[in-house]
Length: 236
Image 1 (spheres, one colour):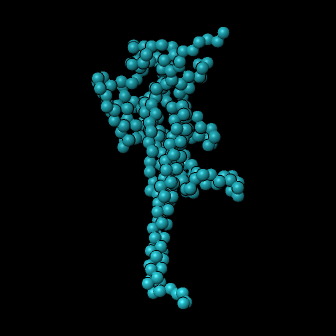
Image 2 (cartoon, helix red, strand yellow):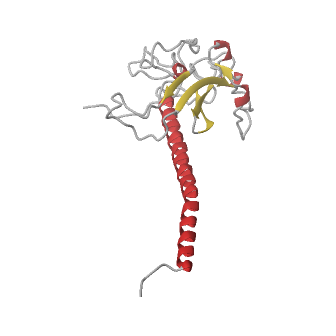
Image 3 (cartoon, rainbow, N blue to C red):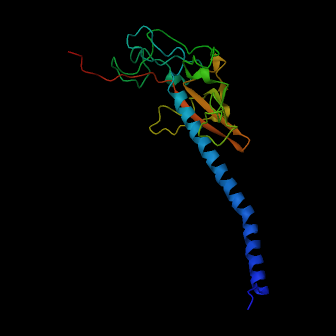
């Protein structure tokens, strides 16, 4: 008896093949969604890393006390900040109301020292303070210097990070109140390029763009606080 494929078997085979072919677009679509999700996640990670890097710089060019042997950062005088946060020499010399008296605690310069005027960073390797990052863009290339052999672990070949720095209002609350619910008024942010806009709060805004997904924005804030130091036991 000669073996042969019955009509029913042929029809079943055609159905199975058809179902398989129909599922291919769905599999490709799911794969594309997975790649897109991975690119968004790596963009978020890159943005968070960039934010952390920016916040590690001094608040202002004038924050560093060069007359201090330890190079401490001081709180500065601003022009458009809340009056409650201005220096108050009748409270304690070189301090604001609320500052704790003590040599290693946060304080201002002995003489009035305003925030610096805006200066464009001379190059991408000489950043000294948060202002230097304003209007700077960085594209994360998917390949290294030697594109033939080097490759970074980024799926996105179009990832761009652009930083903007602004002053925002610090007088949106009553500092004499028992309970303070501070409002970060991002809509009224003002350029740092005008020293007359200076307040005690800077907003760092990071715009993340790519051709592979919708752009998004990260924001964080840095305050004009100065720096405190910890007591340490002197060396023998």
